[in-house]
Amino acid sequence: MPKNRFREQAALLDKARDAILVYDLDTRVGFWNKSAERLYGWLAGEVIGRKVDEVLNKTDATAAVAARNQALESGNGVVNSSRKTKSARPLWSRAGLTLVSDAEGRPHSMLVINTDVTEKKAARVAVPARAAHGEHRHPWPAGIAPRPEQCPHAHPHGHPHAA
Figure 1 (cartoon, rainbow, N blue to C red):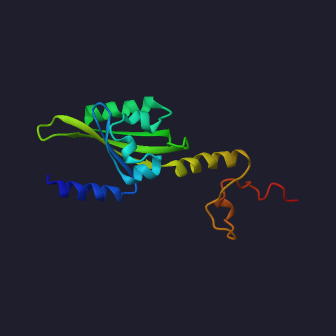
Figure 2: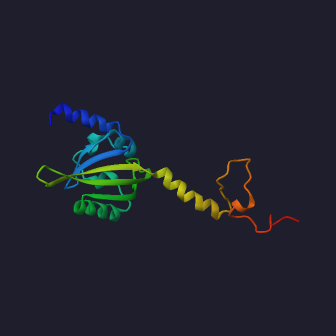
Figure 3: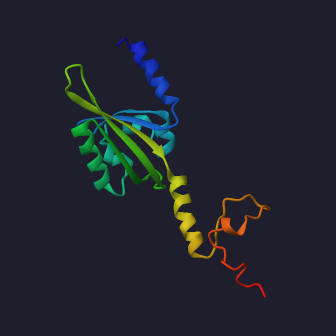
């Protein structure tokens, strides 16, 4: 592939919202897009050539290793894991791993697309926490009262505190 075409394709990957990286079978990073820089705080020049696990600071390496092994065996893997950025800020990501092979079918690298799911994870944790503290969220907009049969917390004979 001509160098200009490679640069054009790399520039397209830099426009992606998700963090995209490629590492070799020894797990050394060979590509790190701009979204990876934004998400993790590491510049491409700081991570190229380093082992991916040194950079991504996974708090649970077991799931990541299992996904990597799955991708090596079947061609694809997925992992949801917590990580820490360069500044030690915690985040949750969903990573899709794809084994990349050459024209003869010999694997040579892993393409990883990481999506930041920190806000979604925090929202899922917050809802049960609010419910545990007596706060209930209803799907109805403010000012619109549901019919009693629509409310999962309704008392069968009207309001439990009605006189």
